[in-house]
Length: 581
Image (cartoon, rainbow, N blue to C red; front, side, top):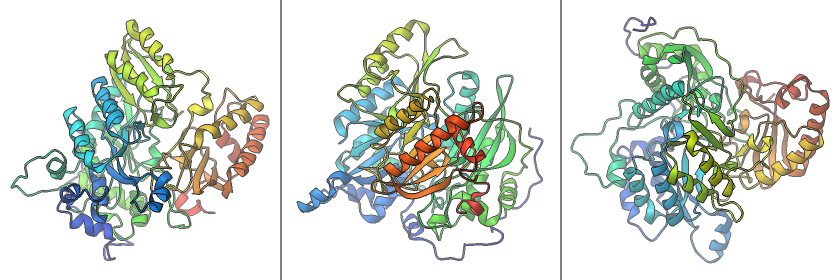
């Protein structure tokens, strides 16, 4: 029994000051309300073979089923000249709490990606799951039915719901990881939409006579997307400050005893709109492990009722906390949970990156973390990466763990199989010692050609850019060191550039905003250093700063800490107030 139980209070559902409930709702609220619990007319649209896409409302609704409508922007103009509609296809994202998938499941998704998608790849994402890119409308049902057949789904991996729940991919502390992963799965299941729309539309399930109910999400679902993590210190591999809700695992003597709860993080912003900004999460306090679902539900429902449904740019939890006050939000959560937060337990984050290579776990099994550049698994001419993972899956007896840094862990390898799996990985380019530590600590979002929001290149830009950065690091005797460097094609935040030591955010083709001053632990937001500059201008800035860092740094001082200490850039203390100063 928790010692933080409160007396029963009536739930207070009217937010305090700065209420926005009387403002007209956005159009997104209309189509969610009219969707009949996410059904819309998706089933009818699937029968329309004249177009490869969905109508405007359904193209938004399918997001709550785990899909985005996209097209190949590389050939958009060419198809327009031919009087053809864009090559419309869908990106489908799997729900994979904690990123764990079995070899058998992997082989099934590998086959589907090869035979049924336009691009033929599997994309590992910063949300610790995989995406299919390039599924045509006619093949959508078979994609969903394949996932269902192997025990997976894509429910609530996009749209205004709680999305895929992340969990530290810690291959060493196996006992604590197993407990934390179990809670990540429970939280994911507890916060899922309850509507049968997914089953009816994609799995040909029979419509029941009983009415739909959404006791947690409501018939209008959440005001905006909601992201949740479970993290095991000292590794901050899930980047807690990028997420609405975070459970920081506190363990004693190898047993998970509870969580510190962090609320209100988020990185997305809009160019030119200073009412939008990245924000770190606030520490609400400690809860017993058995109360995790109760507090998760209380936080989600408070955001559901208090979030801004009028202006989607200010609809995330981070803006709700700023509008109503963190303490007011926290008190409401405690009322709904029926108990109070206790003082937070001490913890520390020391790093974010994955441990590339072999690591031995406490159960005497081995874990091989494979660096997958930008998370793209495809068979390249000199590196058949996708085939290599499939060959490992054919013999692997443990599981795979996808990481929030776009990498892949071959987990639970007995010593007797270690050499065979390493040989396959090397033969297919999955182990490559030529990859620098800098490359291993850099990542990018997908961006062109598939993301409709992309303003500049990211995934296709990063590899050659890092080759140049590697040269600069080597020139300054820093080839064994690294800078957390991230690139996003737009300010929406998918590549988590706003928690990087060097962050590039796309502004236009070939032009980026350059941000500096994050830290290696992921606990500080960077600040704008140069706006709308070319790649050559970026490289000139970075080369000068790396040279100074090499000569003037304190012992073991990270690049982000260096540029703050030497006043190259001022630290962001409270982004709601000083991010744009």
